[in-house]
Length: 334
Length: 281
Ligand SMILES: Nc1ncnc2c1ncn2[C@@H]1O[C@H](COP(=O)(O)OP(=O)(O)O)[C@@H](O)[C@H]1O
Ligand SMILES: [Mg+2]
Image (tube, rainbow over all chains, first blue to last red; front, top):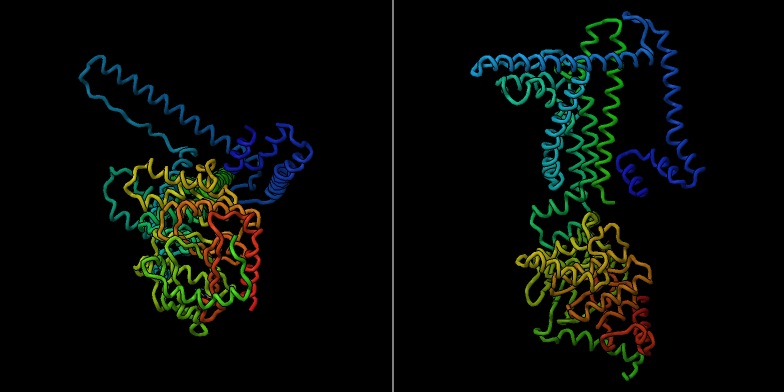
């Protein structure tokens, strides 16, 4: 039971909580407290120190929107944003309830009447923006992986393909999302003309920009992994005369999986970073647009709200990274 | 009681043993290596590892190859396995020339080279599926389980290969090779990475399975005792470049062999001395 719990924590990236489990089971109290202090106590002190320095420094910075907000103001704005979200949700619920009541009343008078259902027209809240951003980055990440994995496998399996594609890869890799965005926007606007498609146009533009910037780490890591599969494994595959398909799925890919996941992890990180920039510039919904809107808004609360966004972006990026670490641990065989 | 041999007896046998090989009737020969030459291109020019190497191995015979490090033993074995290109000459297996790798030659590599993401059973199964594609799932699994049991792993079918010790991994390697029912077994210093205790255990396991199957076997080793214990003949390779077969020693112990009896046999030390003498000159 305890061993299971510890393993679970280790796999899910919560290894700092392991000493707590061990403490709870009465294992070598003194040693566990030392570990606990190192893993939780010291980071905690650092955070407190950081917040203190921030609040002191912020007081001394005057901007055109007033004094730079400190941690307390930011925390307050985070609460406000949450209240706004809950408020919108309540209004939406009431709106739908009213609409339902109206419709049932109409149907009671005349069962053949045609009724209208309208979706709630309220504005997107902060939480909605976060969800949109997550959806977009996920979509972009999936597209990037679908492109990067096959090309990476191809590059890794054949030196010639790698030599041929290498210059293109190296040149496209460092291009900034801000440079891709206009091109993607124009192309998507030209190609994706239906308005009742599955996805919003802006959603696809952001997702594709994310893909274009984030596919490279996965591609290169996959290529490197496939090219450096242990020759003994390849020899076993040759002796057994595995078909190319079987060789790829049974030997090459499993052997490369840890490296592929390292690539995917970097890609997701890059994607998240790129997404915020793309949303900001393209006025696509999401956290980036939230930041931009607040900046344009220029009210006295704006800076604090932007700082809430900064912290949210950081926390989500960290969580996505931890998720990938956990997945990577699951597939690695060493 | 076998008549004991003097050292000069063994020496005189050299010509005889080499000649005998040439005179083996083709029908009893399993592996026939003719004028084999291997050249590696290197930045400093061509490096001739093997030149005009000749070797014949009887059906059901176990031979050990010894020679100095770097003389070309691995090169020879990988060419038989079809994993390394032949520069000149020919290798015939049951009268057919070898053109590439195939499961009719079971290879046991120096490192176990199991797939760590598969269980012991899956590692063996991967090959068995290739050689007996017509068999039912159950039949295929039974073959794997039979050989895994024979190497002492009846309790570890479903253990991940990465969770097994080196010695146990190499046991799976042995099971994997035998389960293919190959025409010949090729072993490249299979126990070289193991401690001496485990090595002894695995030699016993290998001999035990081999005694049942009597598959022609070519084993490379740097361990003189291992060569004597396992082989019918010990092939001594000259040092490279241009290595050839320098001498052959027949090991005339009865089979099945028992380690203790062999260690107590008078001839054992003569064989041993002879091989060490060859390696030191
Ligand atoms: N792929 C290769 N290219 C160039 N030289 C090689 C290659 N493989 C082996 N050699 C050289 O050939 C010689 C024989 O190597 P090898 O067959 O591994 O010897 P052994 O197994 O007897 O120790 C060595 O000198 C080695 O450096
Ligand atoms: Mg070698």
